[in-house]
Image 1 (cartoon, helix red, strand yellow):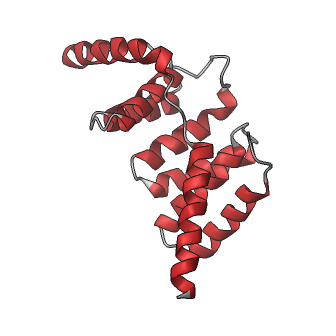
Image 2: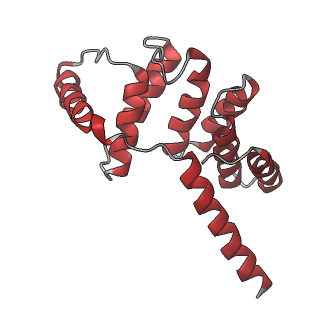
Image 3: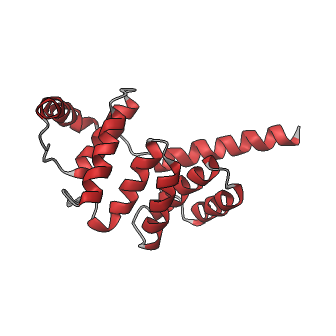
Length: 166
């Protein structure tokens, strides 16, 4: 009985934490997302470079994932490839080049490639990205997926040590 109660509490905690760290879809940008998705289809057929900002690629990936469109995997991979290759660094006011590791890690996380995600989350935490709280959260979940429960618990404690965002 204690175990069932503990599992329920842990599930509730994860749900609340996920709400804090999940990226919202900016409804004012849906037309922009759709325009770039159409551009993507045309360019893929022609095998051309998209030449859009990697942060926008990341946002489109999130939009597609939440829309349950399986194409989101292609977009996350595109984001990873472009950020790693240094083709289009994220240069918007929302983020900086320092946070590239975080977006690479999150992209791997959403592709369920937890081994790769676990390479990039510690790098993003080490360079103190502004999303460090969420980096600890997702790093904890990635570690758990790989069976590294003690390390996952330590990361979750670090996540919980940050002040709440309201």
